[in-house]
Image 1: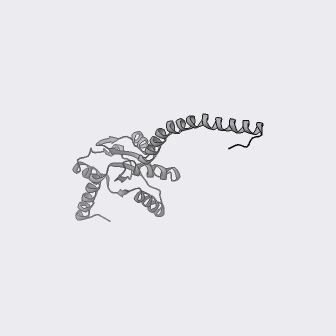
Image 2: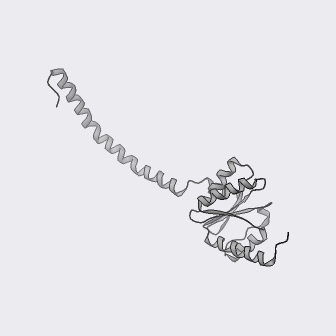
Image 3: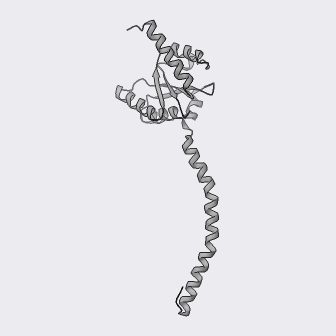
Length: 178
């Protein structure tokens, strides 16, 4: 079924708006997934405040040019491609697609756009493997807390040792410990 000119214009406008709002774009192959699996992937992306759109590569190229993003060449996007938009966290869409791809081999990240630069397949995979902002904050908090816990333990150690020693001394002398 042929897509009308009005439908293409609507798709182009929608793609352009999403590209302008997104903090990062990831391109992924998805062919071979069942309708149910695609629905599951879309749901997981929504939960991460990301979205997947399937459109012709020509429309994606025109939309990225209109949105002021670098234009990805067709040679780097082989076969049918889905565009995954990450709206709040630039890593969220890539991470969801990467994790989903571990269980469903049909989903493969093949490139992307981040901070106005085109990402190769390897760079997009590295982006997907990076820890999220929440994970990095937890690691940082743990690093800040660790010396304080060690210091508190060191300060507490002589006092508790002295208290145990006095208790043992009191037991040997037969006087009640206080």
